[in-house]
Image (cartoon, rainbow, N blue to C red):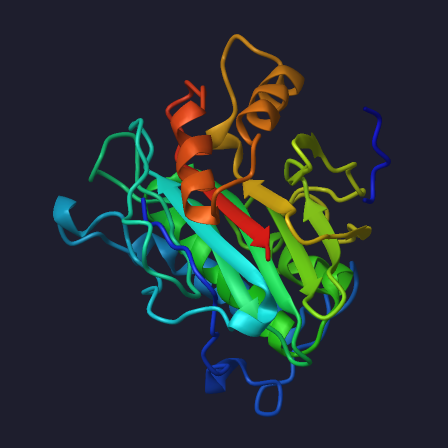
Length: 314
């Protein structure tokens, strides 16, 4: 059936987000938008650059310390948001997700390296409560492995949080993070998808920087959303990002993921997305069971780490 386009650690439940940390409070630390060629590097991008330049010093104390936990998941999502959210993280070189499927909250889960417990890597998710009541759903993937990828992930996540807390809309948010990613000496590349949901109306506005499209599951069918334009992070400091819109309905499920969940060496990305889309049907009975089923059917064989975020509209 044709559709128009704009339409690890486990967590599920109803999310209550903690207060914005003082260092990200826009009242105490204004954050400008992205830098452009010939302009002075803005505060957030400069902070991101400084963090990225320090990443070689990031260490994992021992194999038992990986994967590196950037945040603990110890808060819930406000039941009034009308969402049931589950997340999964699958370390690189493994075939299973980590997590227990019961904790709920806000946080990020970076990956580990090519073998369980070896390095850390750059896949993460985030769920943020924004000023005004909207929710921001994020899944991202910083290229590479080991400490540099993990440090880049943390710096990118923190810059994104700061911009979101300042009230930046999706295009400015991604442009700001991209501006910072373009300036480190050694470079940083990656992809990210951000969805901003108004719980009162069910309207989801989303944008991407080179990331694969979210999958929408509705009434026993599933399809990838049409892609708005958006270049991956770290390539062009002048990149601009388009926004697409879809009205979510009760019973819908939204699936965000990183490429490590779907890519196969012998398959095209279209075939891999078709397999993920089929695995996402049906949506029930809840977000946690849905995420577990999608992950169990994932056919990727690249050995990359993977993140999965599933949001059910109640």
